[in-house]
Image 1: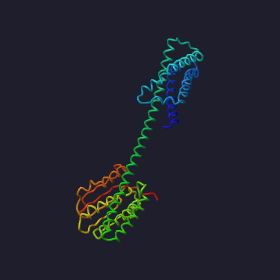
Image 2: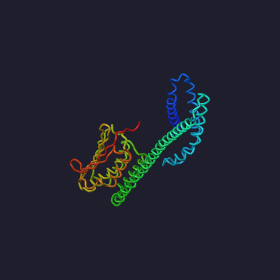
Image 3: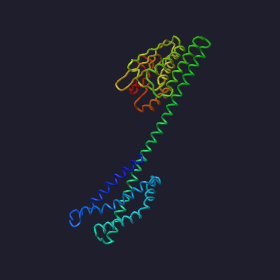
Image 4: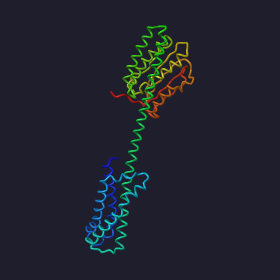
Length: 347
């Protein structure tokens, strides 16, 4: 909350307080025909003007931010030191207005307690108003700082999680190249070229948390090309992605670990020709993406580091509005299912 808003709020509450005080003090003389109403109001308003001038003068300084608001008692003790001066001046103002305007001469044993009681109560209420508004403002500032810190932490975590992906698949790709160099130099050269294309494409999305599904699938196709060279003749890929789902926003490089798991736990562990299917579909306000591979059923792959990385990124980006589940696929193999909130990219 800004300082100007603080002042506006306190001024509004201060005026409301004095309206109540004025009504209370003028109520006994409303039916007194000997004292005009305007004179009674003037007698009440003059001390109000004095008290308001005092309050405005105090608000112009930065003294109310000292000492700290928590705990409250030192703050109140510090500012109550000015109360005796305020009470003396309030008594003088009340005495003069009663004598000069109303021409009343209340005994001091009545006027003094009344002036001191009214001034003390009003000053304490004034401090309470300031303390409350400052406390609310500080709570909002603390909330904003906390949200900012949480956002910065989440961004750092996302950057760290995303940075872990590239070295991992580069290492696997280079292992493939190393193995092919001894058997098929031509295929090894193709893998290196595809790896270069993949790295160039990944640079375009490296600094973004989310990309379109179309961009994500382009990266995935390049990665799949490298893996097809590694498992030559042992895998077929099927893409079932409707055009209407391509503008959807998805976490950058989310699907690569899922496809890697499909090769690692499905194709690599089988001697037969296996099939990997990538499907996407929109269901209402959700986007569903499946990566299903035939071959051996699930054997602890749901707890892998890559999948845990994906789950953490989903939580940081969408909290509980996204999920990643790994289960045995229908007809065998393993299926990784991602559910995301439907959010199309801007055109």
